[in-house]
Image 1 (cartoon, rainbow, N blue to C red):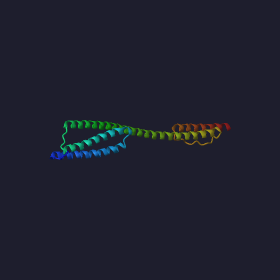
Image 2: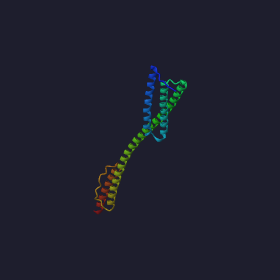
Image 3: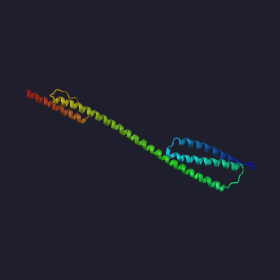
Length: 190
């Protein structure tokens, strides 16, 4: 069988366009391989299907180029319907992958918002923790003072407690009570 290449100018441009499409398809297949390395495991099969469809399109480009170059008879209606079917399946899978990717991006945005909220709560809890530590320190200091007074040391000086409003009020009341006790003790001694 002897094949002879005959082309008209429109066929030449068609072959150039098809070969450029094949080149773009090869580059796209290489991108899909890179993308498959970074997508979640459960998404890989969809990218494999996309790469397979791209491979079929590439083979179709080459076959159509050969059909044009060698003027081989082919039923263009069947060829066109197969191209449209493959294109529709390809677009469907691309839309499905895009949908899942967008959902994952939105989930990541929601996780970032939750993380920011947790960081704010962490900072708030840090302030609350510091306030509690300050209060505990004041309570322990006040406990030591009360212990000294219970052992008869009425001359102890009560420091002003300013970190906690309630303890400051209690400290003031305790100071006045201690002063009253000193006056009463002095009155008894006289």
